[in-house]
Amino acid sequence: MATKQVKLMDIALARSGDKGNGSNVGVIARSPEIYAYLDKELTAAKVADHFSEIALGGVKRYDLPNLNAFNFILEESLGGGGTETLITDAQGKVHGLALLHMVVQIDESLLSTIKHD
Amino acid sequence: MNTAKKMIRVANAQGFWGDSLLGPKRLVEEGPVDYLTFDYLSEITMSIMQKQRMRDPESGYARDFIKMLKMIMPQCRDKGIKLIANAAGVNAPACLAATKQALSEIGLSGVRIGIVEGDDILDRLDALTNEGEALVNMDTGAALATVKDDIISANVYIGAASIVEALQQGADIVITGRASDPSLAVAPLAYEFGWSFEDYDKIAAATVLGHIIECGPQCTGGNYTDWRNVKDFAHIGFPVVEAYEDGSFVVTKHDGTGGLINVESVTSQLLYELGDPARYLSPDCVADFTTIQMEQDGADRVRVHGVKGLPATDSFKVSMSYANGYKILATLCISGPDAIEKAHIVSDMVFARMKMLGADIPEEDRFLELFGSNVLYKGIVESPEQPHEILMRLGAKGMDANKLNVMSSEIAPVLTSGPPGITGFAAGRSRASEVVGYWPALIGKDKIKTTVKVEEV
Image 1 (cartoon, rainbow over the protein chains, first blue to last red):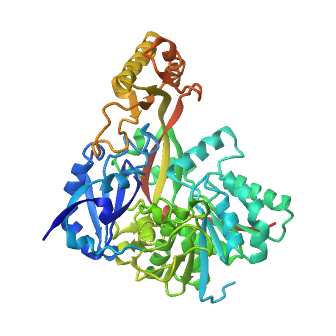
Image 2: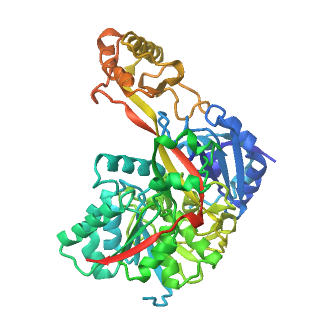
Image 3: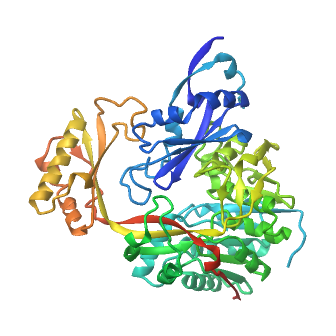
């Protein structure tokens, strides 16, 4: 089976916001087949590695298979809390797009499961 | 008066304090709606409002709401649209007085205003701790004693029950303090359909509904990954939900408005600021987001159903804020070549000069962010080695505001005494501002009594 290198953005969508001293990143697979692939591929450890300079307290993953979605909690990712920090992205608003920059290797056949509307 | 309606339309008209006034204006003009909800409060706004109130006893609520009322109330009156808003912030009496004043200024009478209070526990903190409420920090486990003397605001996230009571007493406008965001939408459904708060699945469905619309257009195409598919951001439609008695609902928007509603745009907002999806805690219930079913139901319509819920926990969440010193932030634009190197020299220079003036800032209290050198995607995308320009954000934190303010006088002199190619000082001198710490805690529900009062003007 031929594989192809794509950005996570090509196969998923994301939204992020603040959660206390951390942030959350919701990820939605663009098809149920891609959800099944990401279930194995997009582990908390891999996301923690991706955010190694941002999520200083590690990453936790929750699953929402009913919505083909995952919820990642990025601990200590706001430079010390939304009301106190001086960093520009004090609420983790861009962490979603930041995750979608991840490069992944995927079976080409899975790409055809995405509906373009 | 409870009339058994088959479907009611609930719309979120403002999603935060400072949101566009066009939301409510367009919602009442562009299509049918029964209830408008207004969600003004967040952890940060509560502390800002408390500080405003300390300076001016007549302030401390969402003034936007008053301006907005004057704009839309005549039409709401004609169309029978009811308003539910957590506009009272930390000053319900002042908000009520301003609401009455606004209605009289536009010549409306016979309007019933409900006010829900009891969320503010600032004056009761000593008594509550004596009664055994520890109010430890939920995130860190720290004891309240470490910040008790510095507490600025303390409010309980209250639920929908008191809002329902106000609606039962005929309120056309319900104003609350720190009602939880989704409860603003749970209340009209529970009232109109006569739901019991023990009908957990339906209360959970309404909680999901409230969560989806609480940030307005963030579920109708705003902040959406596939932004090229979103039509006409300037006229983006605010969410209007058609809610049914069985707990199912359709997320849609008025015809002719911009934006995009599909399963992905609604799911995106469902995931926003989410913790454990199986246990979404609200004062009204525990909603299980892993049971939600969604499907497209025509253009710009998404049907949501199947939501399961559990009884609410026996505690309320408390949101407290406390004074935690000061911060200052100054910005300068630095051009290349060698912009990054020059920025570090400028930073060292400013802190050295502050020290010469008696304002030594320890290393750990200094802050430097070089915008344009890969700040937002740190460690994720490759950084430019030689940006042609960067925005230097130089700052410091500390307990002494006067010491921090020395920084403001040492920024401009950098232009004449530092390296070349520095500009962008048009904003003028910055000043130290208060740092507000956030202290989330839990409190026994038996300790909180909300009150409901309905007045006619």
